[in-house]
Image (cartoon, rainbow, N blue to C red; front, side):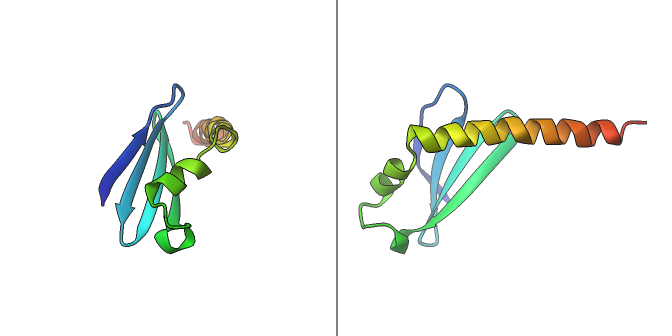
Length: 83
């Protein structure tokens, strides 16, 4: 797996990897991460540029919101198991 691009964003780290005819888009925020896989054949042929088009601000905003939900869910689970 190799890094083919990184997108700057103030709220999370966005990395795009290439492996086995797939692009893997990884979002990281603190200890949490989300990843999305795209088959190169499902894209229109522009390679990583097609991935950039998919990663619009609307999509990134939903990813950021999901991080907030993940943090809340994990915090609640952690509190349930405190002794």
